[in-house]
Picture 1 (cartoon, one colour):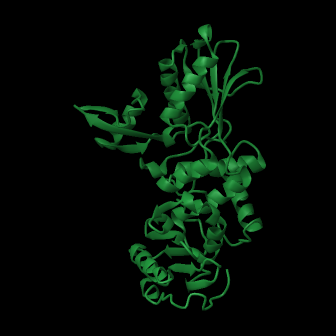
Picture 2 (picture 1 turned 180 degrees about the vertical axis):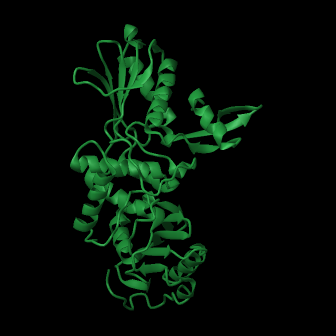
Picture 3 (picture 1 turned 120 degrees about the horizontal axis):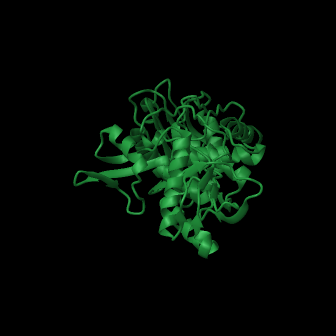
Length: 389
């Protein structure tokens, strides 16, 4: 980032300053990196979900953009099927159904008559406690795990006095009904559970449902047991989604589960299994310092849900500069490519204003003053940058 210059003499940001308080920070730069506007540029602020951009960059560095998550399937000499999860954040119902169909092809004839279904979740240490995640039923508080499905959430509604799935592709399994009733809601998407074993069991039950749909028979139980070296591999499912496609979904829906599944996985890539929060933090901090030159960023987890995360507006501009080649993965509104963040008393937005001829103008808005909204600042920013056309 360079110091201010007269490279865009027609731009007027004078109306931005009155919208900012002493606890807030903001910066705007030109496509060549010249700082056009700054307010508290070097004070570390809470970034909320805009932290996901740094997580994405670190993941691209350690895993590459075309990385695909893998889930492995094994059988043993007791006719048991074993599933080893490796952190795939997009094991959604449609994917589980397709995997079940693939297994039906691999295990023909008598191979479809199985005993127990065993689940191996040892790729991540358990439990992983993400700072900032509470025990609420809100989807943004959903936990993570090596083997989990549908973002560890359940989407339901009530029809004729009975709870049913709100998604035609997903069955409403009996094991989720107590949790639904406990909310007192008639419809909604809620966190499945905060118990690691329960989210693993749910994953197994959903796989069992679709495996039965694909023609498998099970005579035993669903249980948690690690894969043995003597087990025979029958299928390695490589995700249909590359990492850049996963990041696009993470940013579009601001999905905290996706962010921290990716965060833990890059820690595994760098420091080995099992995945832990500490390894993810170490990998992200090392990337920020060694690749971006940022040694003051405080990283507590990868989604931005923790209020312990800290980054300055100037350092976030550096993150945006590195993210510019991937800016089309962000949400778009006309000429704005952006990522927002929301926590209690915190409103943030970072991104780019695209000028078709001059390029991308990166901007950072960190409002850490309760009650403030980013919308007036963004409107004024767009008005000012429109003068560069």
